[in-house]
Image: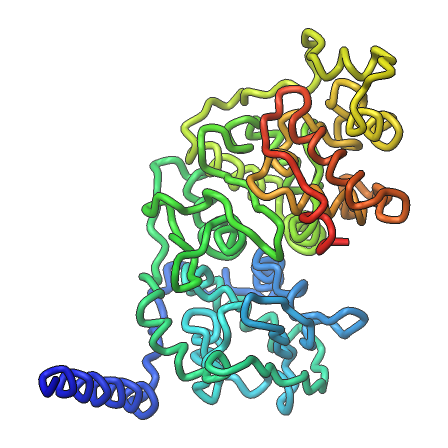
Length: 433
């Protein structure tokens, strides 16, 4: 017993020492990387482009708020986090930040006063930003963005998550190296890798989370990187596996999806629509193609892709059922004919760039059906982009279908044609209504 008590006391003392160290030892800032480009390449225009690539505006602009003035509610597993004001206002924004302090917010998740930002700010990924891109962003925010005096609500998470000093230990365990490392001899693939791993922070959504709630890998050196995740109850598709959309779509189709939120096979929904609207549509065609090339490279698949939305195929059992007028037809099939068949067709292949194919759709066959249920209940809208300005919208069916009917319809779609996903219950629908 005395030995046990002694060990407990030692453990308590060590814990106190560690906590004291984290509270009193000065915060360590990651130094700047070597600048490998001439000063003439570091411009505010370039900074604006990097900002678009990193999707800063979407998170740091509240609904009906001024651009970058913060206050947007970000739902997290820990509670609501309010985004910060990143305009150059000296009282409520970042107007008093030096370049080094600005870099620290991107690389280390640190405010000017040394307090830790919550990792809703994707500094796990932004650590890969080159020094030239960091300095260009600093020029843009300090000289081109209008200052807005807007004091945002204070983030107030429950204990112990309201203790920001605890993030110092989290950072020590989670944060990896800073400098981006080339992954190929191909310049296009390297550019795509830099964009995916760094500014576009794809892994923040498309990588699973580990026991520390950190991304399970921030580069292709980690097996779980980009193998799928979950955001606000929506399943986020795998971009890396042999059965992923990156393996099934051609590089050109992937690039077109990034720029427009649509291609011959699918349309964007949920958070991805916001990413397309506020970020990816502003990238050059070369950069979107580089991202697509890198994702294709990760799967080891061919350029051609394995899907062909236009080619005719032999009718499936589902297609024969839907065209049979059988009075014994299941409720799910009848609901599909009444509510979905007019757009998505009896073959489940929809119409390219307008109505997404349901046969083989990653959202439809995801391990969790919540994304599909959400779309059936509440509908979805495509973003308006320069290349495809039509903001097409699918109506929601919550007003006309019961929980049981939505479950039957979702089950039919998840198991129709070539799909082989699990069924859906009314109990899974009710919380999402």
